[in-house]
Length: 176
Image 1 (spheres, rainbow, N blue to C red):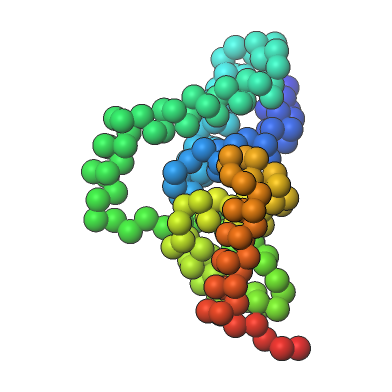
Image 2: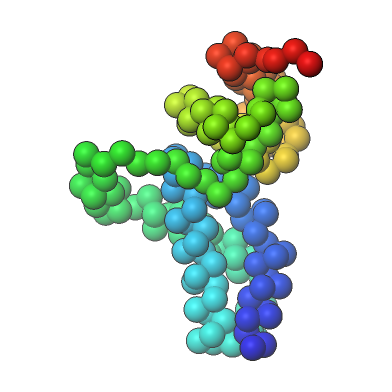
């Protein structure tokens, strides 16, 4: 039982920053859930096998796991394997927070519209998807998003505002 409590404490302390890091480093947001699951599964296995005392600096340990998982996930072997497994399949982008992204109450009134908006965002360039997910999904400021993605803040702002304009244009704003 001590192992579960220790795991939960580390999970609670590191999840948000790890998710932000993984989102900023992936080339397909559909992979984020799998990578996050693998990171925390490996953390749990390590705690069970080697005990809590093995992990001296939990945040650093999880960060190292995240780097290793991202590398492993994008190794050449896995890329080729992924192409064969997914060939011909429609891959859905079901991030755990995708339906909960709130842009403006006047735009999103129900879950169906939210799903359509998420679908629209998932059809945009990867950098736009990352920006929108980090800013609206994770609550990072535009400056923080720019830093995480190594972009100019003005580039991030223009992408956000341009995307919001496209959303408003496509889905319309209702007058109260």
